[in-house]
Length: 233
Image 1 (tube, rainbow, N blue to C red):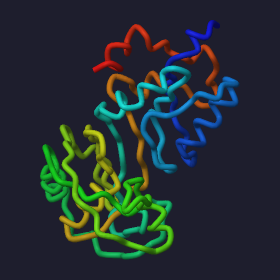
Image 2 (cartoon, helix red, strand yellow; image 1 turned 120 degrees about the vertical axis):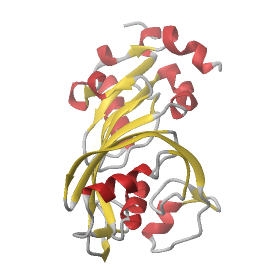
Image 3 (spheres, rainbow, N blue to C red; image 1 turned 180 degrees about the horizontal axis):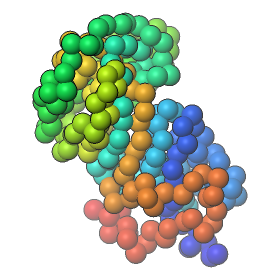
């Protein structure tokens, strides 16, 4: 394989329990290459599409950040954690049996369109030069400014209390964990994410993803034909 063919992307199905940096480290070892990065962080509990940039394709980082993302997730009602997902510590419990499926549909529908969302403390957003999650790990909470995001599609795919499964398509900067907490609060309860799968990043879908154990040089998709114009936009 020529050096030019070693420049491109790999669509990886990130395993649960791995950080995005963990995946990058594995890919570096498997390809024996140093210039490898990722185009958009996934939480450790999350699985699914993680776009890995290889060689000169690392310059396309901003292009991939602009893409919409698609997720499938499960909200578990009744328990709130400090991280917003099942990896965190329980910080609050509240009743949920009063919530009907119709009420859940109404609550979710309120979040379709352009909305303001406050980033969670367990996020990579910076506050005075420090990542919020680093402050959260020390038990600190600071005021965060809400940001405009867009949720173009949001629908319930399963309702079996205490769990509500849903799918969504959203813009960059959207926090699924925060959405779940906000919806649970609107229904008079609390909640956290127990399952999160990224189904797509722009045109790249889970069906195209390579399992991490199967990544090799043949997994690299050349980017010049498809992305050279995008890189110059």
